[in-house]
Length: 135
Image (cartoon, rainbow, N blue to C red; front, side):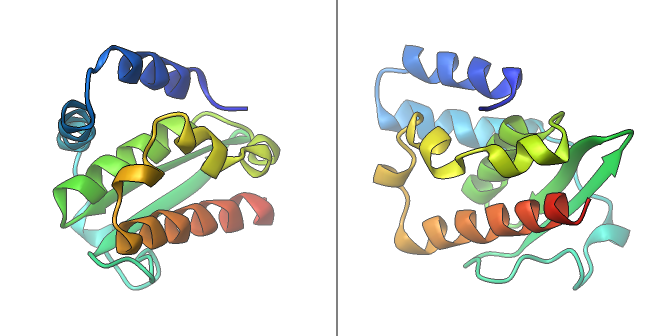
């Protein structure tokens, strides 16, 4: 299960011919995100386990999960954007039901990320799931 925005992303990826084009697209997704407010870049929002600096600010309003995020690395910022498409707009129970590795596998990300980047993605997913589980 994933959001409609993520399904659109999967469709977009099918039109991109090679991984270099997909990589560039992920970076563009990150560039298109609004920057995270400096006041939200605090230890409580920082994701440990990432090679680069990553901050996630999740929230649940009216029963709907969403988060904002930022990274100092372009590709990681793009990965934050991908995760936003996967999770934003879902109910907390649906967030927990998402098979993130399976969904991201549809994009072929695992085959093209370094071990450190993959660990960082897992750390971001764990943070997202932890917030949804507390709801």
